[in-house]
Length: 74
Image (cartoon, rainbow, N blue to C red; front, side, top):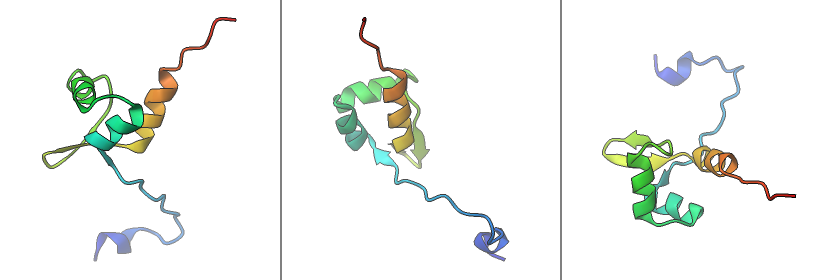
């Protein structure tokens, strides 16, 4: 029996957003690829290993931006 046959059909499956390569993620953040690789090495941002490739979830980018917002002084 295949894995997809074991999942009850009544359960909705959330679509998985495509993972971003380091170059695309750096572009979205407005930083250099080197800076993002430094952040990955320093564990400042989460990443996913796919074989030898390092990938970033789009949700990780959203969370990273949200958690680094600094409010203006009133």
